Image 1 (spheres, rainbow, N blue to C red):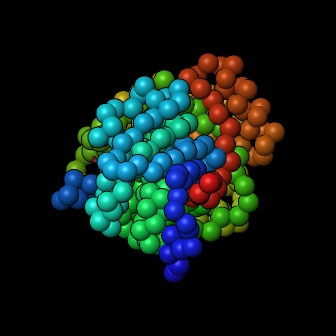
Image 2: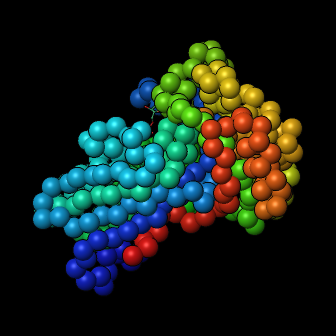
Length: 312
Ligand code: C5P
């Protein structure tokens, strides 16, 4: 495999665009000794992007978040993108510094892996800026150490995730899927949703040790059968997310009434993804949902889209 840094001259800055994800299936098994849950999930990258720019600095690592969502981000040291840059620097013994700027568009704590996308973008941008000679496999391994959802935004497209969700295998999918995304006004913390899932699900014995993604859904994706995909979307965390934010039930119902082929909470929520037959149907659905006032913000997106990409 070729090195990412090959043939680059000295760089002043590297800008990376990185997509959000939704989970077309999220099947949750028992809680493991390390506190994580065994998962089988189908990740699907969608056309909502953050941009991470790594700007050369003589020394030290710093990080700033811009855009309308910036005030919902915690301290710099807690930012997963900052931690990603620190991890890469330590692993490769880099002495140079970096200033990261993040242009934030993916909802914060929205179940779309926005923080993980920023970390993935920071890994790719810094690997190029510092010319560390890391290939895609190296970055995927570092990404998995940062969080279960960090490897997928590097890969993009459509992929099955096993283990904590970080063990990825690309999945086949035909055609373009048109989504309407309903963002909520406030986020949900992933650990809270898993904890509520444990409460609702009862003992670990009733859950599979090794959950599997639904075969019928994989086949519908390969065949590009949008209506079948819509009917087969599944999320074991949905009841837990709805129990923490009961308004989500009305949003899900409104989308179904308005003709969505499928309606699902994305990941640990609270973002809801509605599948439409095509672009005009998605636009109609978005207009309908906006007029019903059941979501804080409604956005159109398509998937699958490529993973983290260098823009300049
Ligand atoms: O890996 P990440 O830091 O994104 O996970 C956040 C939290 O979500 C974990 O601390 C854990 O509470 C929960 N989680 C889980 N099982 C997974 C993934 C996440 O319980 N497979």
